[in-house]
Amino acid sequence: MRDVHLFDPAARIDARHDLLVRGGAVARLGASGTLAPDGAEVVDAEGRLYALPAFFDPHVHLRTPGQEHKEDIASGTRAAAAGGYGAVIAMPNTTPPIDAPEVLRSVRDTAAAQAHVPVGNLAALTRGLGGTQLTEMGALRELGALGFTDDGHPVADAGVLREALRRQRECGGTIALHEEDRSLSRGGAMHEGALSAELGIPGIPCASEASMVARDAVIAGCEGARVHFQHLSCAASVRAVAEAKARGVAVSAEATPHHLLLTEDAVRELDTRAKMNPPLASAADRDALVAGLRDGTIDCVATDHAPHADAEKAAPFVQAPMGTTGLETAFAALYTELVLPGVLSLDVLVARMTAGAALFDLPRATLALGADANIALVDLDAEWTAGEHGWQSRSAACCFAGRRLRGRVLLTVAAGAVAYRAPSLTAVAA
Ligand SMILES: [Zn+2]
Ligand SMILES: [Zn+2]
Image 1: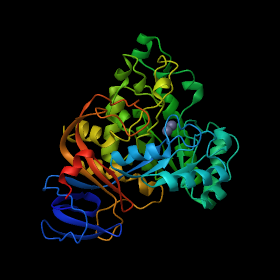
Image 2 (image 1 turned 180 degrees about the vertical axis):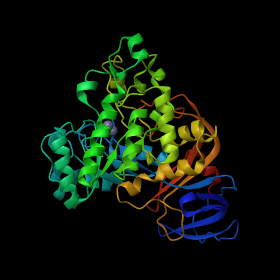
Image 3 (image 1 turned 120 degrees about the vertical axis):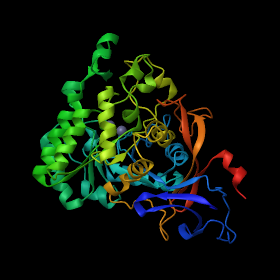
Protein backbone atom coordinates (compact mmCIF):
# COMPACT_ATOMS: atom_id res chain seq x y z
CA MET A 1 0.00 0.00 0.00
CA ARG A 2 1.50 3.26 -1.11
CA ASP A 3 1.12 6.43 0.95
CA VAL A 4 -1.52 5.06 3.32
CA HIS A 5 -2.50 6.58 6.65
CA LEU A 6 -1.65 3.82 9.11
CA PHE A 7 -3.80 4.15 12.21
CA ASP A 8 -3.31 1.65 15.02
CA PRO A 9 -3.61 3.43 18.36
CA ALA A 10 -2.74 0.34 20.41
CA ALA A 11 0.63 0.17 18.62
CA ARG A 12 0.99 3.98 18.69
CA ILE A 13 1.04 4.14 14.90
CA ASP A 14 -0.57 7.21 13.33
CA ALA A 15 1.29 8.36 10.21
CA ARG A 16 1.44 8.19 6.43
CA HIS A 17 3.65 5.36 5.22
CA ASP A 18 4.22 2.80 2.54
CA LEU A 19 3.31 -0.64 3.82
CA LEU A 20 4.53 -3.87 2.26
CA VAL A 21 2.76 -7.16 2.95
CA ARG A 22 4.77 -10.24 2.12
CA GLY A 23 4.35 -13.84 3.21
CA GLY A 24 1.12 -12.88 4.95
CA ALA A 25 2.84 -10.46 7.32
CA VAL A 26 3.54 -6.74 7.59
CA ALA A 27 7.01 -7.06 6.06
CA ARG A 28 8.13 -3.46 5.76
CA LEU A 29 7.03 0.04 6.69
CA GLY A 30 8.69 3.01 5.02
CA ALA A 31 8.25 6.71 4.46
CA SER A 32 5.60 7.43 1.82
CA GLY A 33 6.88 6.86 -1.69
CA THR A 34 10.06 5.06 -0.63
CA LEU A 35 9.19 1.35 -0.77
CA ALA A 36 9.63 -0.56 -4.03
CA PRO A 37 6.69 -2.89 -4.62
CA ASP A 38 9.05 -5.81 -5.43
CA GLY A 39 6.45 -7.45 -7.63
CA ALA A 40 3.62 -7.02 -5.12
CA GLU A 41 0.27 -5.55 -6.15
CA VAL A 42 0.20 -1.82 -5.45
CA VAL A 43 -2.74 -0.04 -3.88
CA ASP A 44 -2.21 3.71 -4.05
CA ALA A 45 -3.92 5.26 -1.04
CA GLU A 46 -2.84 8.77 -2.09
CA GLY A 47 -2.39 9.76 1.53
CA ARG A 48 -6.15 9.71 1.87
CA LEU A 49 -7.12 6.15 2.75
CA TYR A 50 -6.71 4.75 6.25
CA ALA A 51 -5.29 1.33 7.06
CA LEU A 52 -6.77 0.15 10.35
CA PRO A 53 -6.15 -3.11 12.17
CA ALA A 54 -8.87 -5.43 10.84
CA PHE A 55 -11.86 -5.62 13.16
CA PHE A 56 -12.78 -8.61 15.31
CA ASP A 57 -16.36 -9.68 15.93
CA PRO A 58 -16.82 -11.99 18.91
CA HIS A 59 -20.51 -12.60 18.19
CA VAL A 60 -21.97 -13.64 14.84
CA HIS A 61 -24.50 -16.22 13.70
CA LEU A 62 -23.33 -18.07 10.58
CA ARG A 63 -26.31 -20.49 10.73
CA THR A 64 -24.26 -23.56 9.80
CA PRO A 65 -25.17 -26.32 10.31
CA GLY A 66 -28.80 -26.61 9.42
CA GLN A 67 -30.09 -23.10 8.70
CA GLU A 68 -28.27 -22.33 5.48
CA HIS A 69 -31.37 -20.71 3.99
CA LYS A 70 -30.57 -17.82 6.36
CA GLU A 71 -26.77 -17.71 5.97
CA ASP A 72 -23.82 -20.05 5.58
CA ILE A 73 -20.17 -19.85 6.43
CA ALA A 74 -19.18 -18.56 2.98
CA SER A 75 -21.83 -15.82 2.81
CA GLY A 76 -21.48 -14.81 6.46
CA THR A 77 -17.72 -14.49 6.29
CA ARG A 78 -18.00 -12.63 2.96
CA ALA A 79 -20.19 -10.14 4.82
CA ALA A 80 -17.58 -9.98 7.58
CA ALA A 81 -14.75 -9.30 5.14
CA ALA A 82 -16.83 -6.61 3.40
CA GLY A 83 -17.23 -4.92 6.77
CA GLY A 84 -13.49 -4.86 7.47
CA TYR A 85 -13.51 -7.83 9.84
CA GLY A 86 -10.41 -10.01 9.92
CA ALA A 87 -11.96 -12.72 12.10
CA VAL A 88 -15.24 -13.61 13.79
CA ILE A 89 -16.58 -15.97 16.42
CA ALA A 90 -19.63 -18.03 15.44
CA MET A 91 -22.39 -18.90 17.89
CA PRO A 92 -23.48 -22.51 18.49
CA ASN A 93 -27.30 -22.13 18.36
CA THR A 94 -27.54 -23.91 15.03
CA THR A 95 -29.52 -26.99 13.93
CA PRO A 96 -28.30 -29.19 15.54
CA PRO A 97 -26.60 -26.99 18.11
CA ILE A 98 -22.82 -27.22 18.38
CA ASP A 99 -23.00 -29.14 21.63
CA ALA A 100 -21.00 -32.28 20.86
CA PRO A 101 -17.46 -32.95 19.60
CA GLU A 102 -18.61 -34.42 16.28
CA VAL A 103 -20.73 -31.35 15.46
CA LEU A 104 -17.88 -28.99 16.32
CA ARG A 105 -15.40 -31.02 14.27
CA SER A 106 -17.70 -30.97 11.27
CA VAL A 107 -18.41 -27.23 11.43
CA ARG A 108 -14.71 -26.45 11.83
CA ASP A 109 -13.93 -28.57 8.77
CA THR A 110 -16.58 -26.67 6.79
CA ALA A 111 -15.15 -23.34 7.93
CA ALA A 112 -11.63 -24.39 6.95
CA ALA A 113 -12.92 -25.10 3.43
CA GLN A 114 -15.34 -22.17 2.94
CA ALA A 115 -14.56 -19.23 5.20
CA HIS A 116 -13.23 -15.96 3.78
CA VAL A 117 -11.91 -14.87 7.19
CA PRO A 118 -10.89 -17.07 10.13
CA VAL A 119 -13.84 -18.33 12.16
CA GLY A 120 -13.56 -19.19 15.82
CA ASN A 121 -16.28 -21.17 17.53
CA LEU A 122 -18.00 -21.09 20.85
CA ALA A 123 -19.55 -24.43 21.73
CA ALA A 124 -22.83 -24.78 23.56
CA LEU A 125 -22.57 -24.60 27.33
CA THR A 126 -25.44 -27.04 27.86
CA ARG A 127 -26.68 -29.98 25.82
CA GLY A 128 -29.28 -28.98 23.29
CA LEU A 129 -29.00 -25.45 24.72
CA GLY A 130 -31.43 -26.85 27.25
CA GLY A 131 -29.88 -25.17 30.27
CA THR A 132 -29.58 -28.25 32.46
CA GLN A 133 -26.79 -30.63 31.43
CA LEU A 134 -23.31 -29.31 30.71
CA THR A 135 -21.61 -30.29 27.45
CA GLU A 136 -18.28 -32.15 27.31
CA MET A 137 -16.41 -28.89 27.84
CA GLY A 138 -12.94 -30.41 28.01
CA ALA A 139 -13.33 -32.39 24.77
CA LEU A 140 -14.83 -29.38 23.00
CA ARG A 141 -11.92 -27.22 24.13
CA GLU A 142 -9.45 -29.77 22.77
CA LEU A 143 -11.19 -29.54 19.40
CA GLY A 144 -10.70 -25.77 19.35
CA ALA A 145 -13.74 -24.24 21.03
CA LEU A 146 -12.71 -20.79 22.26
CA GLY A 147 -15.31 -21.03 24.99
CA PHE A 148 -18.96 -21.69 25.63
CA THR A 149 -22.34 -20.03 25.34
CA ASP A 150 -26.01 -20.92 25.10
CA ASP A 151 -26.60 -17.71 23.11
CA GLY A 152 -30.22 -17.30 22.21
CA HIS A 153 -31.01 -18.75 25.60
CA PRO A 154 -30.10 -17.75 29.15
CA VAL A 155 -28.55 -20.14 31.64
CA ALA A 156 -31.53 -19.86 33.93
CA ASP A 157 -30.27 -22.28 36.57
CA ALA A 158 -27.62 -20.58 38.71
CA GLY A 159 -26.33 -23.96 39.88
CA VAL A 160 -25.64 -25.01 36.31
CA LEU A 161 -23.69 -21.82 35.69
CA ARG A 162 -21.67 -22.32 38.86
CA GLU A 163 -20.79 -25.86 37.85
CA ALA A 164 -19.74 -24.61 34.39
CA LEU A 165 -17.46 -21.99 35.98
CA ARG A 166 -15.84 -24.70 38.11
CA ARG A 167 -15.17 -26.81 35.04
CA GLN A 168 -13.82 -23.75 33.25
CA ARG A 169 -11.03 -23.74 35.85
CA GLU A 170 -9.74 -27.00 34.38
CA CYS A 171 -10.46 -26.57 30.70
CA GLY A 172 -10.18 -22.80 30.24
CA GLY A 173 -12.13 -20.88 27.62
CA THR A 174 -14.45 -17.91 27.96
CA ILE A 175 -18.02 -18.38 29.12
CA ALA A 176 -20.24 -15.91 27.27
CA LEU A 177 -23.72 -15.22 28.54
CA HIS A 178 -26.93 -14.16 26.83
CA GLU A 179 -28.65 -12.62 29.82
CA GLU A 180 -32.40 -12.86 29.97
CA ASP A 181 -34.86 -13.86 32.68
CA ARG A 182 -37.55 -15.66 30.74
CA SER A 183 -40.04 -15.21 33.57
CA LEU A 184 -39.82 -11.48 32.74
CA SER A 185 -39.25 -11.55 28.98
CA ARG A 186 -41.55 -14.39 27.93
CA GLY A 187 -43.88 -13.40 25.09
CA GLY A 188 -42.26 -9.99 24.68
CA ALA A 189 -41.48 -8.64 21.22
CA MET A 190 -40.00 -5.21 22.03
CA HIS A 191 -38.71 -3.06 24.90
CA GLU A 192 -41.28 -2.59 27.64
CA GLY A 193 -42.18 1.05 28.02
CA ALA A 194 -44.59 3.76 26.92
CA LEU A 195 -44.21 2.82 23.26
CA SER A 196 -44.97 -0.88 23.77
CA ALA A 197 -48.08 0.15 25.71
CA GLU A 198 -49.11 2.55 22.95
CA LEU A 199 -48.57 -0.05 20.23
CA GLY A 200 -50.18 -2.82 22.29
CA ILE A 201 -47.15 -5.09 21.82
CA PRO A 202 -45.97 -7.22 24.75
CA GLY A 203 -42.77 -5.77 26.19
CA ILE A 204 -39.50 -7.08 27.63
CA PRO A 205 -38.44 -5.09 30.71
CA CYS A 206 -34.79 -4.07 31.24
CA ALA A 207 -34.83 -6.06 34.47
CA SER A 208 -34.91 -9.24 32.42
CA GLU A 209 -31.32 -8.64 31.30
CA ALA A 210 -29.94 -6.51 34.13
CA SER A 211 -31.02 -8.81 36.95
CA MET A 212 -29.24 -11.74 35.28
CA VAL A 213 -26.09 -9.68 34.66
CA ALA A 214 -26.06 -8.76 38.35
CA ARG A 215 -26.68 -12.36 39.44
CA ASP A 216 -23.99 -13.83 37.24
CA ALA A 217 -21.43 -11.19 38.17
CA VAL A 218 -21.94 -12.22 41.80
CA ILE A 219 -21.55 -15.90 40.95
CA ALA A 220 -18.41 -15.23 38.87
CA GLY A 221 -16.98 -13.20 41.74
CA CYS A 222 -17.64 -15.91 44.32
CA GLU A 223 -16.07 -18.54 42.04
CA GLY A 224 -13.11 -16.39 41.05
CA ALA A 225 -14.14 -17.09 37.46
CA ARG A 226 -14.33 -15.07 34.28
CA VAL A 227 -17.53 -14.37 32.33
CA HIS A 228 -18.33 -12.31 29.25
CA PHE A 229 -21.72 -10.58 28.92
CA GLN A 230 -23.14 -10.57 25.43
CA HIS A 231 -25.05 -7.73 23.71
CA LEU A 232 -25.76 -5.41 26.65
CA SER A 233 -28.86 -3.37 25.90
CA CYS A 234 -29.71 -1.15 28.84
CA ALA A 235 -28.35 1.28 31.42
CA ALA A 236 -29.00 -1.01 34.38
CA SER A 237 -26.81 -3.71 32.82
CA VAL A 238 -23.98 -1.24 32.19
CA ARG A 239 -24.18 -0.22 35.85
CA ALA A 240 -24.08 -3.85 36.97
CA VAL A 241 -20.97 -4.50 34.86
CA ALA A 242 -19.29 -1.32 36.12
CA GLU A 243 -19.98 -2.33 39.73
CA ALA A 244 -18.61 -5.85 39.15
CA LYS A 245 -15.45 -4.46 37.55
CA ALA A 246 -15.05 -2.04 40.45
CA ARG A 247 -15.19 -5.03 42.82
CA GLY A 248 -12.42 -6.67 40.81
CA VAL A 249 -14.58 -9.41 39.28
CA ALA A 250 -13.24 -10.70 35.94
CA VAL A 251 -16.18 -9.69 33.77
CA SER A 252 -16.17 -8.29 30.25
CA ALA A 253 -18.97 -7.03 28.04
CA GLU A 254 -19.90 -6.28 24.47
CA ALA A 255 -22.48 -3.99 22.85
CA THR A 256 -23.88 -3.97 19.33
CA PRO A 257 -24.01 -1.08 16.86
CA HIS A 258 -27.81 -1.24 16.91
CA HIS A 259 -28.06 -0.91 20.67
CA LEU A 260 -25.44 1.87 20.60
CA LEU A 261 -27.21 3.86 17.88
CA LEU A 262 -30.93 3.06 17.79
CA THR A 263 -33.83 3.21 20.23
CA GLU A 264 -37.23 1.61 20.49
CA ASP A 265 -38.45 4.37 18.16
CA ALA A 266 -37.13 2.28 15.28
CA VAL A 267 -39.94 -0.16 16.05
CA ARG A 268 -42.76 2.39 15.77
CA GLU A 269 -43.53 1.52 12.15
CA LEU A 270 -43.38 -2.20 13.03
CA ASP A 271 -40.31 -2.69 10.86
CA THR A 272 -39.22 -6.25 11.66
CA ARG A 273 -35.59 -5.41 10.82
CA ALA A 274 -35.59 -3.52 14.13
CA LYS A 275 -36.88 -6.52 16.06
CA MET A 276 -34.07 -8.19 17.94
CA ASN A 277 -33.24 -9.82 21.26
CA PRO A 278 -32.48 -8.03 23.49
CA PRO A 279 -34.76 -5.33 22.10
CA LEU A 280 -33.80 -1.75 21.30
CA ALA A 281 -34.45 0.24 24.45
CA SER A 282 -34.79 3.92 25.44
CA ALA A 283 -32.59 6.87 24.53
CA ALA A 284 -31.25 6.88 28.11
CA ASP A 285 -30.27 3.23 27.74
CA ARG A 286 -28.55 3.94 24.43
CA ASP A 287 -26.66 6.87 25.95
CA ALA A 288 -25.51 4.71 28.88
CA LEU A 289 -24.20 2.11 26.43
CA VAL A 290 -22.25 4.75 24.51
CA ALA A 291 -20.81 6.12 27.76
CA GLY A 292 -19.89 2.57 28.77
CA LEU A 293 -18.20 1.96 25.44
CA ARG A 294 -16.24 5.19 25.80
CA ASP A 295 -15.04 4.58 29.36
CA GLY A 296 -14.26 0.90 28.81
CA THR A 297 -17.00 -0.59 30.98
CA ILE A 298 -18.02 -2.16 27.67
CA ASP A 299 -14.88 -3.77 26.31
CA CYS A 300 -15.80 -4.28 22.70
CA VAL A 301 -18.28 -3.93 19.87
CA ALA A 302 -19.98 -7.12 18.67
CA THR A 303 -22.54 -7.12 15.89
CA ASP A 304 -24.66 -10.12 16.95
CA HIS A 305 -25.06 -10.49 13.15
CA ALA A 306 -28.23 -12.60 13.12
CA PRO A 307 -29.46 -13.16 9.56
CA HIS A 308 -32.92 -14.47 8.76
CA ALA A 309 -34.46 -15.21 5.38
CA ASP A 310 -36.38 -12.26 3.96
CA ALA A 311 -39.60 -14.31 3.90
CA GLU A 312 -39.21 -15.02 7.63
CA LYS A 313 -38.72 -11.34 8.40
CA ALA A 314 -41.78 -10.49 6.27
CA ALA A 315 -44.04 -11.97 8.99
CA PRO A 316 -46.12 -9.61 11.16
CA PHE A 317 -44.03 -7.89 13.85
CA VAL A 318 -45.05 -10.01 16.83
CA GLN A 319 -44.43 -13.30 14.98
CA ALA A 320 -41.26 -12.33 13.06
CA PRO A 321 -37.97 -13.83 14.27
CA MET A 322 -35.59 -11.64 16.28
CA GLY A 323 -32.31 -10.49 14.77
CA THR A 324 -30.63 -8.02 12.45
CA THR A 325 -27.56 -8.37 10.29
CA GLY A 326 -24.70 -6.04 11.15
CA LEU A 327 -21.30 -7.02 9.78
CA GLU A 328 -21.41 -4.87 6.66
CA THR A 329 -22.55 -1.68 8.38
CA ALA A 330 -20.94 -1.78 11.84
CA PHE A 331 -17.90 0.38 11.26
CA ALA A 332 -19.58 2.93 9.00
CA ALA A 333 -22.63 3.26 11.24
CA LEU A 334 -20.54 3.83 14.38
CA TYR A 335 -18.11 6.12 12.56
CA THR A 336 -20.94 8.20 11.11
CA GLU A 337 -23.08 8.44 14.23
CA LEU A 338 -20.46 8.54 17.00
CA VAL A 339 -17.06 9.60 15.64
CA LEU A 340 -18.11 12.31 13.16
CA PRO A 341 -20.28 14.16 15.71
CA GLY A 342 -17.40 13.98 18.23
CA VAL A 343 -19.07 11.61 20.70
CA LEU A 344 -16.31 9.01 20.39
CA SER A 345 -12.76 9.30 19.06
CA LEU A 346 -11.60 7.17 16.15
CA ASP A 347 -8.95 5.81 18.56
CA VAL A 348 -11.54 4.42 20.89
CA LEU A 349 -13.74 3.09 18.11
CA VAL A 350 -10.83 1.17 16.56
CA ALA A 351 -9.81 -0.10 19.98
CA ARG A 352 -13.31 -1.38 20.76
CA MET A 353 -13.72 -2.97 17.34
CA THR A 354 -10.53 -4.98 17.77
CA ALA A 355 -10.53 -5.72 21.51
CA GLY A 356 -12.86 -8.71 21.34
CA ALA A 357 -10.01 -11.00 20.28
CA ALA A 358 -8.18 -10.72 23.60
CA LEU A 359 -11.33 -11.65 25.54
CA PHE A 360 -11.18 -15.03 23.81
CA ASP A 361 -7.41 -15.43 24.21
CA LEU A 362 -6.63 -14.53 20.60
CA PRO A 363 -4.06 -11.96 19.45
CA ARG A 364 -5.40 -8.52 18.60
CA ALA A 365 -4.86 -7.38 15.02
CA THR A 366 -2.04 -4.85 14.69
CA LEU A 367 -0.21 -3.02 11.92
CA ALA A 368 3.11 -3.41 13.74
CA LEU A 369 6.06 -4.67 11.72
CA GLY A 370 6.25 -8.44 11.59
CA ALA A 371 2.65 -9.02 12.64
CA ASP A 372 0.28 -11.19 10.60
CA ALA A 373 -1.37 -8.91 8.07
CA ASN A 374 -4.89 -8.12 9.31
CA ILE A 375 -5.85 -4.83 7.72
CA ALA A 376 -9.00 -2.90 6.92
CA LEU A 377 -8.34 -0.25 4.26
CA VAL A 378 -11.01 2.40 4.69
CA ASP A 379 -12.06 5.54 2.84
CA LEU A 380 -13.34 7.68 5.70
CA ASP A 381 -14.79 10.28 3.30
CA ALA A 382 -16.78 7.92 1.11
CA GLU A 383 -20.54 8.35 1.45
CA TRP A 384 -22.90 5.51 0.68
CA THR A 385 -26.37 4.26 1.40
CA ALA A 386 -26.49 1.01 3.32
CA GLY A 387 -27.78 -1.73 1.05
CA GLU A 388 -27.66 0.33 -2.17
CA HIS A 389 -25.61 -2.36 -3.91
CA GLY A 390 -27.22 -5.28 -2.12
CA TRP A 391 -25.56 -7.33 0.59
CA GLN A 392 -22.85 -9.95 0.83
CA SER A 393 -24.92 -11.59 3.57
CA ARG A 394 -27.71 -13.87 2.38
CA SER A 395 -30.07 -11.77 4.46
CA ALA A 396 -31.21 -8.23 3.65
CA ALA A 397 -32.70 -7.77 7.11
CA CYS A 398 -30.40 -4.99 8.30
CA CYS A 399 -31.72 -2.37 10.68
CA PHE A 400 -29.42 0.24 9.08
CA ALA A 401 -30.63 -0.38 5.51
CA GLY A 402 -31.29 2.87 3.65
CA ARG A 403 -29.17 5.03 5.96
CA ARG A 404 -26.61 7.44 4.55
CA LEU A 405 -23.27 6.44 6.01
CA ARG A 406 -19.73 7.77 5.85
CA GLY A 407 -16.71 5.48 5.79
CA ARG A 408 -16.40 2.62 3.38
CA VAL A 409 -14.22 -0.48 3.59
CA LEU A 410 -12.29 -0.88 0.31
CA LEU A 411 -10.02 -3.81 1.08
CA THR A 412 -9.75 -6.35 3.88
CA VAL A 413 -6.69 -8.47 4.52
CA ALA A 414 -7.41 -11.30 6.96
CA ALA A 415 -4.72 -13.63 8.28
CA GLY A 416 -2.37 -12.46 5.54
CA ALA A 417 -4.68 -12.90 2.55
CA VAL A 418 -7.00 -10.52 0.70
CA ALA A 419 -10.48 -11.43 1.92
CA TYR A 420 -12.46 -8.59 0.33
CA ARG A 421 -11.89 -6.03 -2.38
CA ALA A 422 -14.51 -3.37 -3.15
CA PRO A 423 -15.44 -3.14 -6.83
CA SER A 424 -14.35 0.52 -6.83
CA LEU A 425 -10.84 -0.37 -5.67
CA THR A 426 -9.69 -1.74 -9.03
CA ALA A 427 -9.36 1.86 -10.15
CA VAL A 428 -6.50 2.46 -7.73
CA ALA A 429 -4.79 -0.92 -7.97
CA ALA A 430 -1.85 -0.87 -10.33
ZN1 LIG B 1 -28.17 -13.53 22.38
ZN1 LIG C 1 -26.52 -13.79 19.25
